[in-house]
Length: 376
Image (cartoon, rainbow, N blue to C red; front, side, top):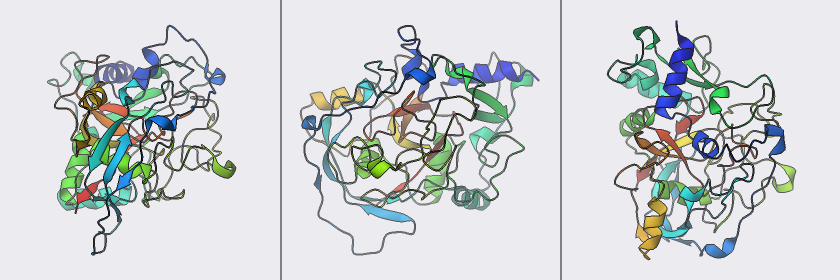
């Protein structure tokens, strides 16, 4: 089996890893190793105007496992340009400029969709995720037939420190990896019912949401909820990464991406069960870290700029009409939000509440999941 050929092919062709583009684009300018990148982001609140929450509160009880998000008007985006990515400026420009947005109220899942919740959906419908489907020659016309095998992408630590200019060093295409087998065919989710489901692509998340009578949040809804009614904070919990010396999210501490490099100072090495940290002001758990979350919007690098240039408060934005990523112009991408257990101050600090990720719509990995919303 020509596994190596296929996983490299899959990674390069599908742009699976949502954070990789930021570093590789600038890698010729910075050749720092993982141990040399420890900058801490700063923020300037002056560009943010106050959040104005809607006053309406529903009289009925929220659906099980969901919380009410009031909606309202807020400043969306980020003014942190380097996101601690080895001091490389400009990698979060897709989250600028800060602009005013209004969203109606809605209900939102208090946690990311879990393995047990997704399993109920699969048992009820017989649904088969994209990672469980054999790739076809139509999708990959240049691939060898022997390489067209089911699987997904799994994080694989490196034996020693590496330059962070080639993400293929710590990702592999794993035959047999899927939501039931997150690390490969020998792994299982038994005993991990409360963990977020992973290895789901955009259409998988959509299918679940439709079955559940819900939908995926827009990017604006996701950020309004994540901010918890606060104005201009760096993180969902405030401006201090570790208030009173304690981590508030499952992210990566230690030397990335070295084997056993994650010290687990936040309590976990790798993915964590839901509800392990305090919720934000709206009662949302794991809105930062743990796993990336699919949202509704197409990904476009210049979308925020177009909204800001209108000079108006944009009401209930649904995202751009088409996808646009100059780094991968042929790839069809939607937005990811929230960061994951692999986000670190050495490589990707996109657990910062105003920043963005992106993913090819049929590409899965073991650090990507989702949560849903429901209109009132």
